[in-house]
Length: 307
Image (cartoon, rainbow, N blue to C red; front, top):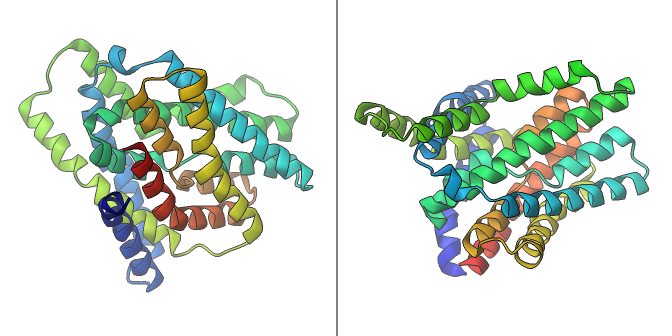
């Protein structure tokens, strides 16, 4: 446990450094936004393209893996939504609480950290988790919020979903990388060097941006945020473990990566969506803050257990 903690500590130390820079105003809100944009559109995209271009998709894709993750995540999503409704919240808030309880920071934190801690062979399963989160659960969120507000889901909603996916650089870079890998051609040396150099900036910059963005968050509805953090850090990986190992018999290593990905703290893009739709942004923000702080211990514990 101590050895794993010492390995994960540098990642959270960079997050802490970013938090300190943001808290002391040394790093402004505007600077954080531009750093996040650099990571999202350039550094992380280069890393994902390089990973995907060198993957054998047929070897890593598994219907059992996808089904296990969908089942476990769907059950936790439904549980959090039911608890929210029983507490008397509105349906839109219940949808966002459910989304907060299952969507982890796979892109900015999970991919760089798990690739280093569990090895490059962990990249494929992590990308599958990321794809399901972005394509399935983000689409479910959009359709439910649109349906609740307009009373129906029409072709315009599907167009918005398709456009959103097409504009997401993580989806685009992975898709292009897989397409290149399918050709069987090796990346030209100069291109590979470029992607490696730019992608190397993704890990430290993403972690620093996470910390700096947390500095501006204030606490609201603390008891709800604690419950959502518990759902994300404990219930979600536990459900994934049961589904992957007891129900679908997923490959042990891939299952371990899936469990570790499920143990990650709440993703920052959930707050962006909450702000966009005007639904409980402060509640989501508090859950991100609490879950990220607690994940120093929970993620370490999960990875120590798996290894």
